[in-house]
Length: 115
Length: 113
Image (cartoon, rainbow over all chains, first blue to last red; front, side):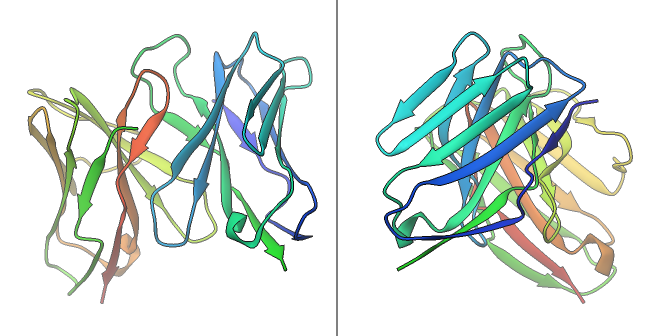
């Protein structure tokens, strides 16, 4: 079955710096990979999706890369702000090429942006 | 994005009682919804897939007689934790599926005392 690792349980950075979070996966070739934000006591909120044939995706201050050879995705937040403090989850489609597939999640990285 | 409403957000119940959690899709029809469980510092784990008009499918290790799922309409799925025990205390989250991304409810923090 798929295994997802988000190497850092927690990451502290200074406001204004770029935060880089890592997601590695094994035993699978996903059709796409997603990143979600989760605040304490709340459900995850979708941020970005990147497909297997895409190398990079951007949305405002967010950037995601996807290396299917390394089986790794990097998630960047540039010009980080204290409001970016949250847990960020990496997720893969459980069933490839299924239009209605549940997701497999990593444990998440808790990001703290210090003013 | 689509909106999924889940309630209650928090519930405390006595051991041995049952608790029902509702999940509604407010602006889309969901033939399928997913129920996840999240323990502290752990990842969200899929418990079951709720299918409108048919039986739910459960992941390995999830007791279907303990976690009853009903998906009677295209906008409502319910999860009932029966005969709850302290080890069932967790964060339960439902989701509906868009074309690719998932839309999650707010989650329910269940505490069994």
